[in-house]
Amino acid sequence: MTIKPICIIPARGGSKRIKNKNIINFFGKPMIAHAIIAAKKSNLFSRIVVSTDSQKILEVAINYGAECPYLRNKKLSDDKTSTKDVLIDSIKKLQSNDIDYHFLIYPNAPLISSKDLIKAFNLIKKKKANAIYAVSKFPNHPLRAFFIKKNFLDFRWKYYQKFNSQNFLDYYFDTGSFYIFKTKTLLKSKNFLLKKTLPYFLPRHKSVDVNTYEDLNFLKILYSYFKK
Image 1 (cartoon, rainbow, N blue to C red):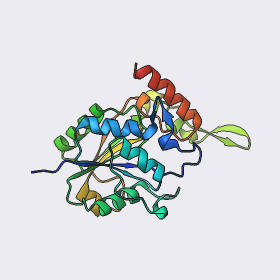
Image 2: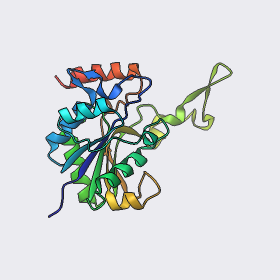
Image 3: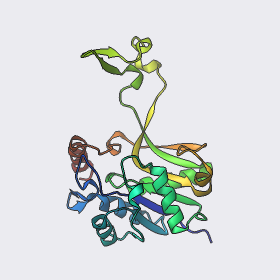
């Protein structure tokens, strides 16, 4: 019998720009609780594991039905630690390298639904891909970007300044919400973006990466509207 995937939710305690970001109150629940609830509702997972260095986050996660079988090493909890390192560390600690798939869900994506997770999982199996990234299209094309040069605006790539937007290829960004990986391929790869990685397209309102209070306030507006 095939064992269900494992869901890893990385949630370190040392967020600097928004203190306690991963457990800040968000519409009556700690922020991370929304991710745990969506994961549980999907019924996809054999285990939902929160990787954290924080005792506070550990207690919140367990209270909402996730597991925290270990506290993450402080060396894997600073600003320079990559998501891949955290995920590989979790797989090693859980001894789950024989599980076919691992999901990684970020704790500050409360608009991600169980339906998104189910659809993405069905897609990776159907297409026999190695990974899925949840992505969204850039609302304004990055090749038309400005930068500040001696206090004044200038085009970053002047070659493209006269291009019409319809002549550009669509560009997409990582929403920082969730990923799916074929475990054995991930463990063999030196890169986080695996060969044969599929996109799972998210609408813009589900693609807010919360790093600042401005992001957080915008997310609250979206959540209030779309969760009515």
